Length: 327
Image (cartoon, rainbow, N blue to C red; front, top):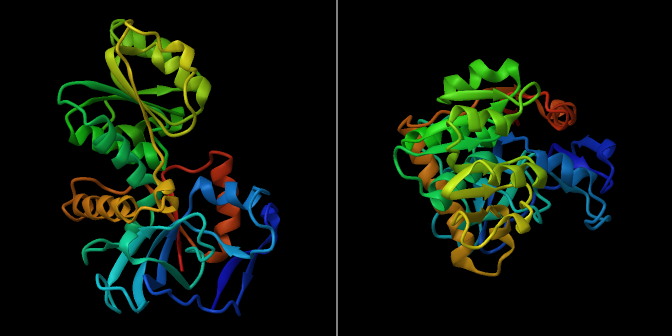
């Protein structure tokens, strides 16, 4: 089969198109999927450049996968050949989405309704499931409250804005000036240009020094630490890219709550029920897409050959929304 293979672990430049990689065979609890579309994620270029993984494995990257079931393992009962599916691949699974065929455990995949295009589904798992877990499952927001979402023009941020508005929140977000019209189109009430403005000073000004009820912190530990200062009493922060300085949490001061996101780590926990939560999120997210309660962020469609170039663009923050490779 045709695939984009990482020939040398830790060497991004070793990503190579091959035409003779064997199709992966599903184990007893797995399904094989004929890949129609695969989304690009920061994890892809991070994994390609990371030298800590086994160096002798020529892996196929691609975490976000949508396609059609091609073969089922002996113990699989929830899918049949021909079913439309989408899923978040385990980072330890060497058979990713940047290939004509991929495999995954059946209990972590979700059915894809017929009215959802494969391209939409292929940009949902990494970004959309993260946003869903953060906003819906972790924060469980109350109508009428407010949230600061960092990186509103990105994949996670774009879905988070929509989910926050769907749950009745006032949304403040950060982005580059060029992306302000885009994040407003997603539902953001206020957008702050993080390159020319002091984000946290702007939040204090916009909220008349009251701060926000929730923060979705997607940048780094330093930003998350500053986020604590713009949380109201009883506020909550959910982090996806680094914990804040824990010394900033003082007992009997503001009653703050901290939530960690570890979406993909569910794959590596030896607990079938935990792993199945990925499918549960996928089912719920598919319903929101199918009913048009949320829309995918801006999508750039590319070919398999374009993937390395666009991973570099993503690494350089040159992408608005999401990128999908049509396989």
